[in-house]
Length: 292
Image (cartoon, rainbow, N blue to C red; front, side):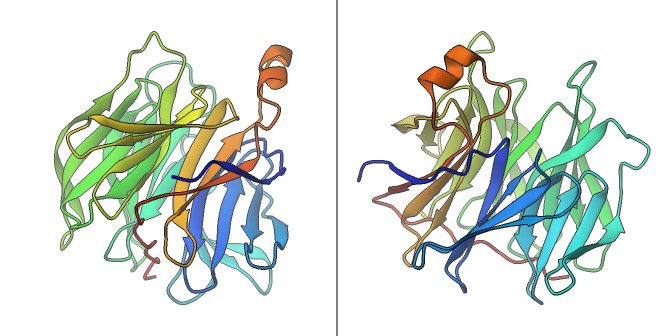
């Protein structure tokens, strides 16, 4: 495997949710706290920033063009021409202390996204939702602390879902036809006494799970049985997520956060909040597009 590259000194407050557009060969990701999303073209080196006006937890490509987003104020479409949000539904309008945090689109074009309590105090208040192409919203899981990485096995029979606070990534049986999940069990559990907790994730073409570690400065690749296969050190303390990109989907892009670091942490990890990339010896899976 090639060495890690420092791609862009973007200094994101909370860089998250990278999405690779295979058609345009460009990378998108969000900076939740800054209310922005970014677009990077590796071929030209062009980097653009777009302000949405509200915190964006996650974004995904639409089959009809543009994007679907899970924002502080619910699900919305982004109109690229008008540069405005068109809201679809807000399943947690009665929970002003919550916001969306991460998500992904499944093989049938349904958009999954989870929520979290902004203050992170009190009992787990987050839930996992599924937005269908017809605009209907379904609550799929409750009692979540910090909803994070979501991904599916190559054969679309398993779904992985991370809850960061309890340091656990779950795996469910997934029914692609109905979009239902069942038989939740622990895929990976890391010690609670450790500072590092699992964040965003990506699944590769071999069915291995690549998990970013908040406060861990690393990406860990897990085998389908949950065993650690490799660890990639990242010079950013709060590594947030990763996605496979490049013409062959063998380049792993990594986002990070520079928010709320102590002076000592910032001195040790001066590249926190930046974008990184590493060439891998395995290919990823293409990102699906929302069918609505």
